[in-house]
Length: 235
Length: 229
Image (cartoon, rainbow over all chains, first blue to last red; front, side, top):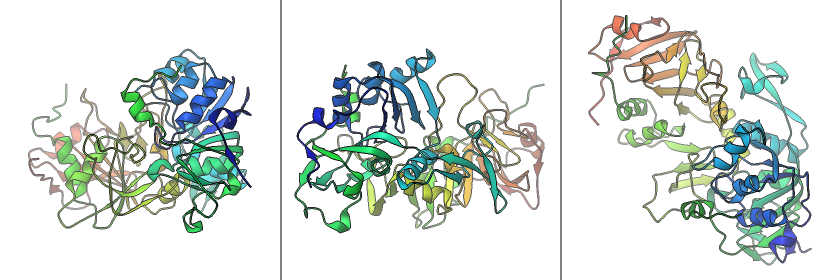
């Protein structure tokens, strides 16, 4: 068993036009910047992208949007310190938005990975984000039916992987990444370090390798926040 | 006739945050909304230590690190760099919101555009223009044992923020339990505003005039007394 891929371009080689792609991270924390940029180099079009946000500055998901690769964003908070890329396309009617409350987004992704097609949540009951959705009462409270989210691909960032694809994360860089690993047909992971099988204590594995298909090592990955401050432009 | 909104005696944001902080018990699990509510963490009474939760997967985070010491994988929901306290824990987003909706948090504190007497909250957008962004606000109003709002009592134009029914898009229905304003502390009980404390320098009539729904009492109203900060 060896899920290690030699380079970033090969890691994202199967992602084509029209794909639904989950991208891990919360803002820049845990964001797989190098994998995103490898995907920009390949330039698939008409993508549906699932992320908590919708890009910042002129790198990462914002650069994907600038490059015209994204047809639709599914996210909770399409704003950032520099939200220009998404805002311009959205106000021009050139990109679709499905706005999902953050906890509902996380649970829909988890449900997708867990084989649960729908669930009920109190979140958004009585608000415009529940319009058109089934409502049910349980023990005297109202709940909104939400459906699972699945994807063709997930591109995520972890910290350490072994050749079986077992993963650990760095601090709050965990966020959506373990959920997205579960919910995609094919999960592609960048890690700072690859170790031999046995190099991760099984007690410390956060994402078991069954949820992971490809791993690429990116030592010393860049941090989105530092790139934003340095004014980096990817495309 | 314009209403005197008593800007001359109103509490500062820091003082509103201080007052809310006095009601957080030692050892409470607390989520503070992005922005103004984050100030509450500064004013915990001596001897009490709450455990702060952030939606992106940390329990027991602390202050910002010194400039240049940031780890950008270690941020809060406002995307600001934070530090860890001893006893901190990391978890993924689904577990984080299980803590929220599952009733495991003791207190959530949020900002508001409007709060209605039935406990409805509007705090995520003012209309249908621009880019909508909700983040975790609609989740946070459900599940915490107490959901507090901290806010100015009126808008910059002097309009009431405490109203009979919210006119802005709702964040949640019947979810707010207590409101700390620049002029008063008000509980929401049986679909009514129940006044608990008001600034001693103003009359009941003055407070009512700047409030968009009836203020009720079910006992003595205490003076709202906050130190200079």
